[in-house]
Image (tube, rainbow, N blue to C red):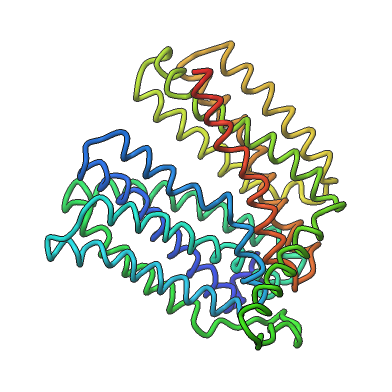
Amino acid sequence: MRDLYRNVSFLRFFLGRLTTNLGDSLYIIGAMWLVHDLTSSTLFTGLAGFLLRSPQMIGFLAGPVVDRLDRRRVLVVTQIVQGVFVLSVPVLSAFDRLTVWVVLAVMPTLALVSRFQYPAQSALLPQIVADDQLVRANSLFKITGRSANIAFNSAGGFIIAVIGAVPLFLFNSITFAVATLFFIGLRLPHAEEDDKPEDNEGDSAEIVDQYLTDLKEGLDYLRGSLFIPIGIGAMVINFGSGVVTAVFPAFAGTLGGPEMYGLLMASVTVGNLGGSAGSWLVEDIPYGKVAVGGFSITGVALIGAVALGGRFTTPVLIAVAFLPTGAFNVLLGSLLQSSVEQDYLGRVSSAFSSLTMLTLPLGSLAGRVCG
């Protein structure tokens, strides 16, 4: 782990991602609250939640673009674009032109832009750290990311309570500016000499054809590979996660009320965090054995959480149930980064992510029906 901290490029990348996490956390909590504040309508807050998550399902479309561009430039441009759109909220508010429709337009725009940011980050990491450091680097990102989200969400709520949601957007725009500074000039010590994408010249038809070809190549890369059975397993896991988190409010009502709901959601975060932190302990075990053994523990823990139904035992068992998910995500990300060729990594990782995320909203819908 010391070698990671001695890597200046990794530290810049790490701090940039951490600052981006800060911006994302503050933006999400600020946007949802602002929609509620402007409308006092559950219809609009429900629409806002949908707009935040819907771009995840089409994220695979960003992969071919990321693979054709300078990934460092992608990170810089996405930070600038997000910062400008976030800044539009306090500016329009200052001129008394802010409406809920502006906020609802900004939300999917930022979510869509982030679809380019994440595969670029995933594809850059193997060029910044050595292969034998990937699992620990990803684990560090997961641990700090989830820990930061807890702290940043709390900070966002505090800021809203003190000064309101609109100033939070102004602060949010500053975080994107700081992240831009970290990403500018990022060096890639493990990049291959021919890794820089070539500029594409030609008319619009040729560019579209090339894009469609790249998109197909990314999907073909997955077809017939070991990532298909892994992806199917991840889809099942995400469906189950959607069901579980959707029934939490009703389940919490049987155990004590809203305070219990907050405790259950915190347990999910703690479980994911613990699994991410301990992923290096199982990195040398065959992937299939980790998945089968880990999610067997998840099943037993969830059954125990329902069967025992205690105010103490249930949150603890929920945390245990989500430990394998945290470890699984770290190992899966590292497997993608170490197995997929660099030229394909952006489009393959985004396609894989979109595929596995399709079942999450379906699970939530099923959970709401069951609940």
